[in-house]
Length: 296
DNA sequence: GTCCAGGCCAGAC
DNA sequence: GTCTGGCCTGGA
Image (cartoon, rainbow, N blue to C red; front, top):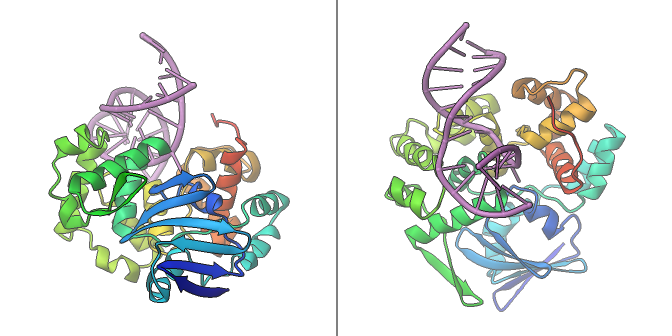
C-alpha cells in the first residue's frame, strides 16, 4: 500500500481487500449515498467520496496524509490483514469459504461509539432506507453543516450534548423514528448522567461492555453487539438478527431455535476469535443472495 | 386494507 | 431466566 495526497484527495494504491459495495452495503454504516460506482460518505468531519479505480482507492476530499494517519487508517481498519482472516475462516467449512470469497473486500469500519449507539437504536425493527433517512434528519435538526454536494447540504452527526437538546417531538415528527424517539431521549440522559460511562467501555471486558450497553434504553442484545463490533473494535461481538437466525438454523445448529443467546454461544464456539467477521461474511452473503428460510 | 422489516420493552410465567 | 404481545413507520 502506498499513500499520497494531492489537492485534498487521498490516494491509496496497491490495495487489496477493499470493495466499497461490500463495505458500505453490509449494514454496518448508514451515512452513505451511492453515486454510480462511488460512495459519498459522511463521517467525522468529512464529506468524502470513495472511488475505486483498479487497485487504487481515492478518498476525495479526504484531506492530507496526516488525515490518513489520524483518521482514515483506523476508520477503514487498514492495519488488519483481511486476506489472512478470510483464509483462516475458509478452513472452517465450505459454506464459510464461499461466503468469504463472495465478500472479498468487505471490511469492518471503526466508527464512532456514540453514533453507533444512536444509529442502531434506530435500526431496531426498521429498514435500512428508513434508518438512513432518520439519521440524516437528526443530523440536519442539530445543524452542523459540513459541506455540499450536487446542491444538497450535509450535516455532521451530533454530539451527545447536542442530541440531548433535541425534543422527543422533533425526533418523532422530523426524524420519523416513532417509539424509538423516547429510547434515544432516555439513552442520552443516561449517558449524560454517566449511568453508563462511554469513556470507560473500552476498558471493560467484552461481557461487561455488552451488559453496560444493554442498560441503555432501546439497546438489547443484538443492538449492543452491533455497537461493539462497529464502534468498539470487539471482534467477538456476534450480532444475531433475523438473517443470522436463518443461516445459523439452516447450516450450523443441530436443533432449530430462535433463542438469541443459544445462537450466539454456538456462533462463538464455531467461529471463535473472528466471530464478528464471520458473521459479517455470512450475513452479507445470505442477505445478498436471499438465502435462508424463516425459522418456526 | 394487510403484512412485514437487520428488535426491544414490559409483563407474565 | 424465558417467553409473548405490542409497537411507529414506510413500502409491497
